[in-house]
Image (cartoon, rainbow, N blue to C red; front, side, top):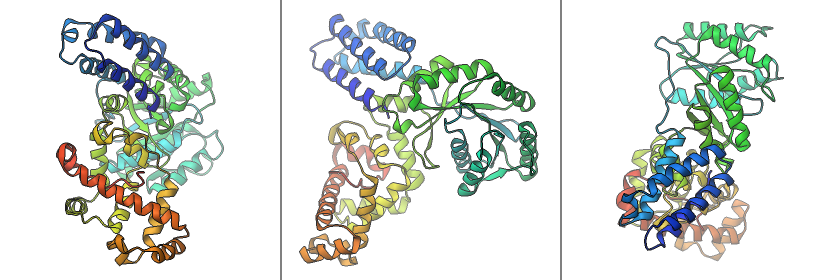
Length: 450
């Protein structure tokens, strides 16, 4: 996400670093490029205008003009301003003083409400809550069935209601009673959507709101629709009073205009972002981390959290020892791939790395998930001796491994090359500047780098 904007902004700062000193002229040129980059990223034009004005006022101050490193000062100002428009701080979910907390999931049809309801249930369950889901979308064919399937896949509680019940208000009331009886502390209400906002939809949602007084009304928007998502969120807030936004499909949004506009336009915070199709691909929105990612500074904190959530600490410590002792085998390589895949799409993980030093171009690396599957198949086709010592894999062994994995000798050769490169990269990261700073993360090796 934000690839296009990030690349353009980093180019602006690189040009500023090439200047001997900061002047009104080269600052104006930089601000013009930043303005164009934001507009091309589909950021709301009013947000862009205010952003540029605020950066200009701070950047042309005496402190920056006389700074030893004015380009770095300007970068900090731009980052601070981005954090401000993104929301300044992480907006947490609110919960009722007396359970169950009622949370409405609202939005237009096709925005991903039902899938997001499932993702949010999983996130709540992993963070100490007992959620209960209910669909009150009695209009869309199979909407309630879809949520039922999701609940089964996630092993999360769902209230289906009595046979034939098709009144949204009664379904929601039944879910609240069920939660009280079963000890569920959060009720997630997946509401109906429309292809566009109409009075009938809003009347129904307002009736539900009046009956339950939800602690949160979360608007789900498709980030890929850009400013249309922002306009819809603003209209929902005007007529319903939303308390937060969840942007879906952020992993496919290279521009990022919706994320950079929605907080200012709606005056409501972004609380979560969907970054993939899997049910674990829902992340709390941290303005400071997103601003750092946009500016190429990486999102190491989020990466650490993913590592700690998915990687076994004892295994990680053992892997670190093997890397330092240059004892990182193909079996270890395979195990690291498997652990990494638990953390989400590999390209999104690389995007969290700081874009400097030895990792300068790591976000540009493209990883084919099918290729990763082939890598695991090739290693599985090796003997334990071959996995322990890749140096014994000669021509005849490579042919046998290729046959056993359904691949070609060329693909086996490519894997061995990738493995050697991964060993080299991780060995270089285990010491020196980055080793001291990233060592505590217990990061596994990244496969597929070529």
